[in-house]
Image (cartoon, rainbow, N blue to C red; front, side, top):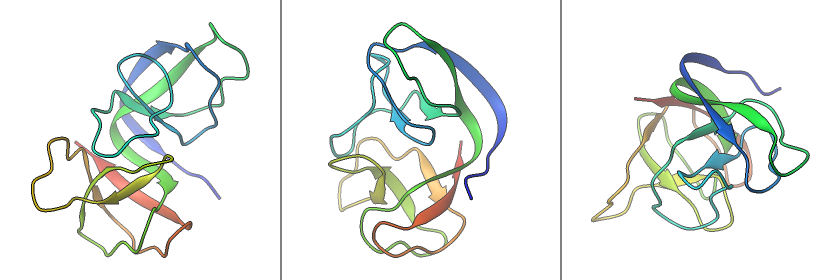
Length: 112
């Protein structure tokens, strides 16, 4: 089950469709590249272009793990969507794992 607790929400006028839990960039589209800047996590799906949705910019969110994640890992965006463990020289760490997850599983993250 997807859960979230938003401390700071931002509005995005979506330039593409997305699912709830997708990472969204500053261009208001879902992120599908590694180590990209994150505006927030979609709280609801955007079923059409131009729809305004809320993004969690600070808080706890549920997203998809790309690779194995351990509690406390620093996280960045992953190729194809979701989050992965930050590598040697990450540029855009945006969250910390609150739960462990296997590849493709849901992981709770703290965005600060």
